[in-house]
Length: 178
Image (tube, rainbow, N blue to C red):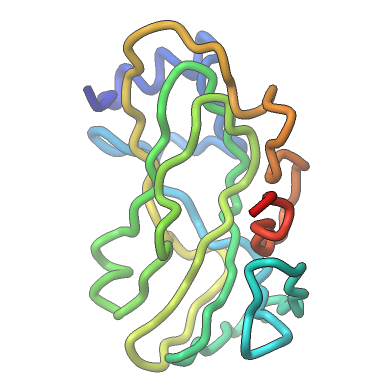
C-alpha cells in the first residue's frame, strides 16, 4: 500500500519518516519531491572493477548549471536527508526529468526500512542536458510494511551507506566478500 499525502504527514509527525528540509509544497498526492544537491561525482577510471575501490572525482554544480553528457555515469545526491523507520521508500524520477532524457537511478530505486541519509543518484542521460542544484529530480514514494522487522538497515553490521553526507557515495561493492 502506498502512503497518501495525509499519511506521509502523519508519519512525519509521529517521527517514523523524517525529511530535512521539509517543504509542504513538495508533498504530492502520494509522494514527496526531492531535489538535486550541489554535488556530482564521476569515476576517475573509465573501466570499473567490482572487487576494488573505484575512486570518484567530485564536481560542484555552478550556479549557472552543469552539462551532463551521454555515456558517462554521474553520481548525484539529493538535497534532502531522509529517515524511514517503518516504511519502504522508493525513489523514482519525475516525469519532467524523464522527458529531458535523464535517468536518476540505474537499479537502486528502493530503500530499506531504517535507511537514514541523503540518496545517491546514478544519473545518465540520452543527450547533453544542463542540470542545476536545487532542481526537482525525483519523488519519494512510501510503502507500508507488513510484519515485524528484525534487521533495520541503520542497525545492520554490514551496512555500507550509513554515514550522513551531502555528497554522492561511490559503490562499496568491493566491501562484499565474493
